[in-house]
Length: 289
Image (cartoon, rainbow, N blue to C red):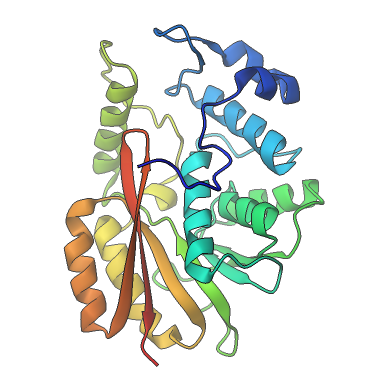
């Protein structure tokens, strides 16, 4: 399954052009075993620099950085989420369309793409003050980003309450939930990822190659419990949100999520996505009026 037709990253990276736009990328680009230009995707600094080049080239984001060891998002996959959401909403353009980004992170990646590609307005929330401080810096340093409001979620158990006002309406919410249930599980997952990226090499100690703080990667009960909590809490905000959506990484938990949504009286829509060897899906729901 290819990336979305409107995804600006659906073709191979044009490294000569990216280096022209962002010269700092040049030291990280080398021929891979097939003789094609590439970077070492297990190198955190290389991946971050590639993101900086992509954001400058495709979204006119001149200044973008994240604190050390914070989550570095894969931009093509994040872009796919935004474009599939646009399809779900009927491809609206302009600031009248408002999106709630749950757990925006220090990268602010979904609001950047949605704002630059569609002109959407965003309410971007997070439980991490450092993440919000960095997101604020990105907004301040890039005047092309408009209509993005940051809100601090004080209560880690709440998803909508405390950041969405009772009379407020958003067309959709988006979410990339914490994936792991424990630090040990996160380390095992990272070790597995690094072994896949470094086939043929021995990898003994896992380093978070795409970064990630505990609140970005780990939640009690893992991804499944987070989404169950999100479903339960979403019913209270049925009139405030047009479409509730979330990424779901583990295919094995999709039947349980669908069952929970049906139990709560929701209309369910599932969108499959694929980037390279990585498969994921968006689960979207709304409540019958």
